[in-house]
Length: 278
Image 1 (cartoon, rainbow, N blue to C red):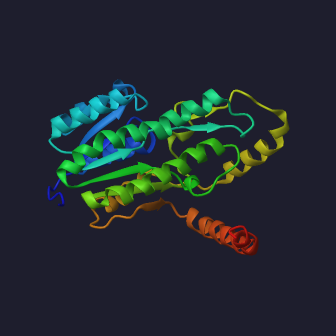
Image 2: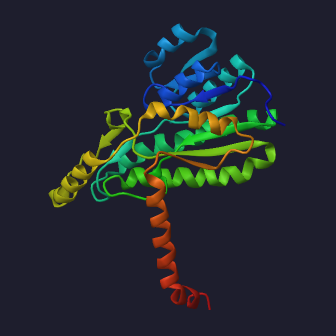
Image 3: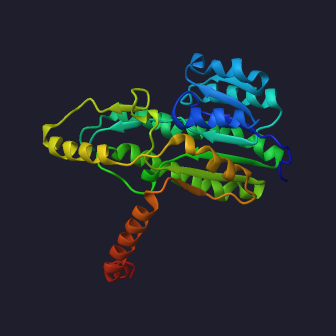
């Protein structure tokens, strides 16, 4: 069964900043309805003033399963259905693998992985009953390859990708689509204190690496985040949406190279690999 309504009903986490804010406002501007969520409802209260009953403002801590369940229920009761559920909340932990503390890593995983799982598990019974739905999630190009200094963040996106990949195979029979949105480098607020945390432990042995990477980051060409909504709409309006959608121009050539290198390495060690089975 497919939703034939003209307007779509969205449930979006992390609506207060970055891509979440841009995509929430874009959906409302095109006439869709949105349950917009943030840790602090005041940060998105102006949406209600501008869009009235078209938007439902919800204060949600995605790491709290009961918060999420209540928010999903309220959104469903308010709008009568949920067409699109979009996991967008998340942040980065900056530091080498040696510098990250257990508490810092766990806290990031609670938001980046456990939070989205709470949302998915709360939304699925509703979507199964409807016989349709689309679950999207903001992953990253670094969910495909990993970079130094953000290894733990990359690992959270690798896990996010695996969860969504498995999910897509599990829910297809219920008429539910799943899509990973994989942005490259964009000029969002991702470098703000809310979106990026620095590991408290700092080892001087990595200073040269950090300086080199910072120089490279400053040269990096970043995309305009306001150019992205049409790509998101193309996905949610598609009859057969993709499981993965890269955003931006710079990552596909890099990913081609990375996959070629991985395949070559596996091929180089093929004889050793195959001998290990007997």
